[in-house]
Length: 168
Image (cartoon, helix red, strand yellow):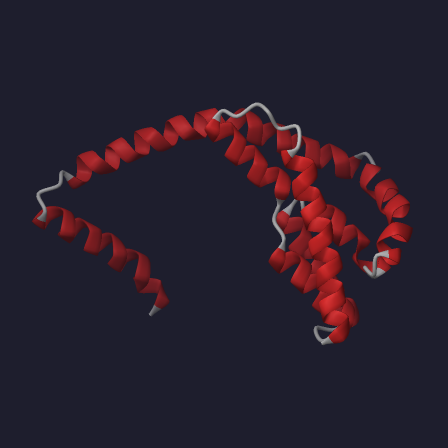
């Protein structure tokens, strides 16, 4: 049934547009033109964030940052096994989900570590990706506090996730 939802939605849009005398094809072309303009305006920002994430991982900076932050995270109640997940989550959604899958395979789906990791991944966002898309479309250049506040909120969310999983 789910395979028919998108084609059915498209068909409904075409039929409703036809009865309301909306030029469906012309509206579609206008929408595509707008999306191409959006794509061209986002592309430089998106490329930079992808390159930065790859450099962060390939340079070994991620591993060094993990070793540096592990004691602080442990003191905040975040298990040391989740340090890398907390660091990667703001950078890469797919990377954090892959890490969570690895934790599930290693510790089991019902373990405390995986429950904490699942809540962290489910309740946080890929901060740099979202900021890249949002700030490139609104043409805002004053980003001084946006990223640090988002990262602080992610850290508070990770601490709260582990605290809630500990008492549940």
